[in-house]
Length: 139
Image 1 (cartoon, rainbow, N blue to C red):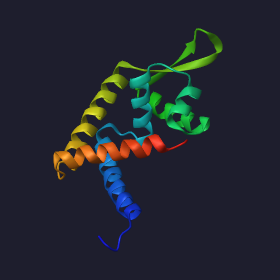
Image 2 (cartoon, helix red, strand yellow):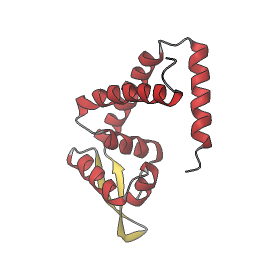
Image 3 (cartoon, helix red, strand yellow):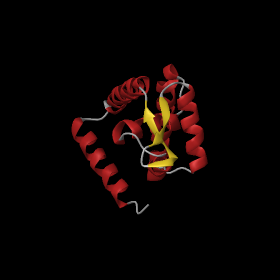
C-alpha cells in the first residue's frame, strides 16, 4: 500500500465497483448509461431530452442514443410536450419504473456487500469524505 498513491487506490476501488455494476445490469441487458438515465427519470420524473442530457452530463446526441435503446426495450416512451408541440418528453413506462426499482435495489444490496468489509464507523467516515469531495467539485 505504501507504493500506491491515494489516487491509485481510489481508482482501483472504483474499477472494482464499476465491474460489479456492469455485472449487476446483465439481467436487464442495459448499459450503465441507460441505467443512469432510468435512475434520473425515476428520481426527477418526465422531462425533455435536453434536461436529461444535463442531468447525465452527456451530449444531446448521446442522450438520443440512450433514449433510443431504452425505448426499444419498452422502458421509456417519447411523448409530445403539451407546452410546446415541437418538443418531446421522455417518460418511464410501467416496465421502466419496475426495472429502475430493481436496479436500484440490486445496486444497494451490491454496495452493502462490497462495503461490509469495513466497520460501520469507517463506512460513515468514507461516506462523509466522498460527499465532501463531490460537493467541492465546481462543475
